[in-house]
Image (cartoon, rainbow, N blue to C red; front, side):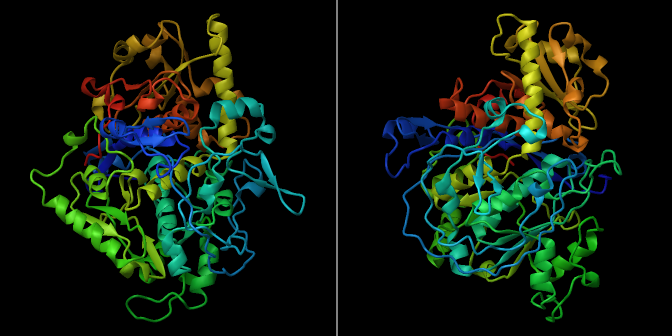
Length: 628
């Protein structure tokens, strides 16, 4: 895809550790802050506090936003994920349950299956189900439960549970190994009960969107944002049809190269497990809304029908469908450079007024709040609205509020258009602001616990992690745990020339944190492995290519995701500055550290660095607020 015509955009870099540590700390969970308040001295000096059942913990966010030319930032391969992190945590008391409106029933199952997986895994129910009743609109307290491998259904079959991970049908490893190595998520049954107040009040509304046109990690982070918004808005999420995705087209004709998000994430299970989240296919949406004449052309005011009355757009040229959706939906260009997407605590107009007034007061402050005010000083997760909003503001000058006007729209659409500078290229945690801090923490837990890669991808990565640990033990007799270290070294077409240094420099910049002779896994798009010869003189280097015999039947378009998962398990990690690929590795490291209480987890600290530039090496070690 050519990039020369694309306008300037910002690469959401700085937020990498901003929310990594926040997310990381917010992850350390369990007891409601309403039930057990944070020690006042701790809350004052160690922000982003989250309470465990026995003690309080404190989290730091992460950094990852730098302005970059859009024509440079769009061309990315699998090794592309802006530095990131997030935070998740505890929440609150329950309210009396309210019944959610009855929803129509339908039986279309049309999401295509991944050619390398069990077909049952990717059949998405294309309707809002009647079994999602009695939803509790109260934001639940975080109470993890033991994960069951499967949930037996009444008919004697089984349902996939996102909290579980079993690799038997994917060629191993054992469940014990897979869970120990890969499972950073939690099973919190009460979280599945939470329903947005707007869903309860507004009934059936829809959210449609266009996938980002950049590399996979840009596509993923935009998708995370949209999924989180659909729940916050209480809208039924319409999953885009199967289509080609930038640079995920290896071996076309020999394996699947047209993808739905259900080919990467457990969309069906996510839909089933959450009473506040409904997901349907584009086909079902068009049958339900377009063919019945409920979608109206905004210019003529008359019913409008999809091109050729087509409802199944899987594998088809997608532009005509996108043009149609833009003509019948309420198209919103909530540009993350310009505004923060703000969600009131309730449907009351007074909450909207409070948010607007608070933003006006912050913008009137002199000097205006800036990033340096918050460096190393994150706000408590339950801080007042003004304090949290001030920290998140950066250079933005407004709020995009989910108010009464937009709530009335039957269909809200988020498009991708370089001509109109419309793109949801942003991490959800640096864009979505919740007036109720408990809703914010719920959203971060939701993404952590549910928007994770498919079991097939997790299991393939677990097999390689197991093999790398075995090698590390064999190389070093005293390394009983099989510890290894990891790098992400982005080269290829990466536009940030400052990161393109020679291997001997990478060694010099990282050697103080590594042990001579250590086993080191390198995730990279560099095809010439001779490039790494200076590092190979000091370390036992291994690459994904060394373990392809463990990946028989795995779609090669998953390889970038495997690299991320394997690198995330390194004892020490060195990433590529500016890279969203490195960012997601670090976020998963944060999740894992918080779950298993690794060294430094109480302060949100990870053994993660950048190998260059020199002034950014420690960037993942210090809290910074959003930077634009």
